[in-house]
Image 1: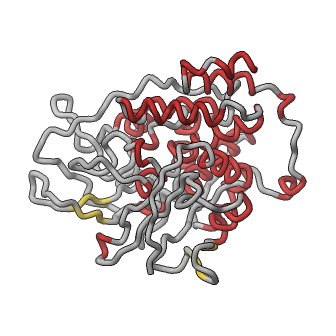
Image 2 (image 1 turned 180 degrees about the vertical axis):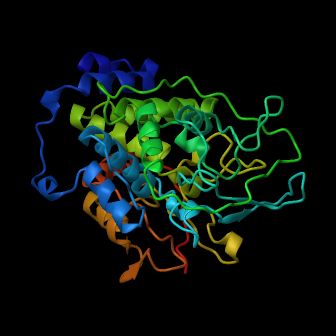
Image 3 (image 1 turned 120 degrees about the vertical axis):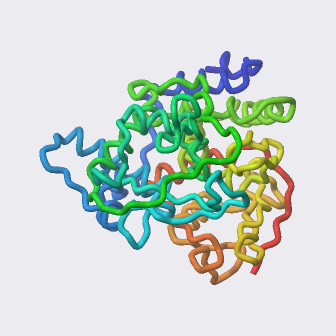
Length: 380
């Protein structure tokens, strides 16, 4: 382990090797007593599905298949909150929410409408599992694409979800096939007036559910595909240096945290100032300002609301202890505004639901990313 920690010329490659070395059972020595009462990913997934009215039909499934569907529910409802965009008055994940765009498509339409993800045979999700995975990994819009003119999904954050392992994407698909079907025909077509094709899937592989069941190694590898150039190289080197002295158990937390932050929760879209571009979210990650906050999330609605600095900068960044961070994500506690809550509008309504282990993993990851000094105004 020490020999590997000294070879940082490979930066995140070294990180992946460390995580691989850390994947032995003996590192699981530290067991939190409180974790015994905490739900597993599968248990929490089933609770979320019931609470949100998903109408799961688990008839005829084996226990392994039920666990797969439950994990898919956790990924959809807890870690990625897909229901925020796809659940409307029509029903759970039935689609129909409109997202205005600053340019019209070839028909003059100026908004994108979220799709119906339910298994309704006429108006719901029509994709096969392989098509679903391709859509999430490349952005291909199977509704609007033809062989001659393939199109990319717009607004849908596939650029984040593409980093998920195949196993997790399959679990999501399994969950979507088991929720209550809702007949809701939404306006699906939106064809940009300019070429906007899907992009190739980065060479990250499918994942290793046997040797990397929590996608910790995958979480480390994701950082390689953030961007390019000197700023990205500096970012990777700083992360590598920050984790070089960590024990194996903490390395696994960091890797899992990276996976959750970068492949599921899409923290980057709200907490990183973008490079710019025609459509937000489809450009490279601004590693120089990664998770440093300052993005005006309220500008679209006519008021100021700036995302917080999540980096470990000692003066302007995330100052919370692990316990305070957990309280923030679980209860909306706002430690910068005494007696206030993040769940009260216009502040971000923290709908994310994670297991205790995953919350600790996210916190561990946020402690090793490069600190960025960026004082964010807390309003109102």
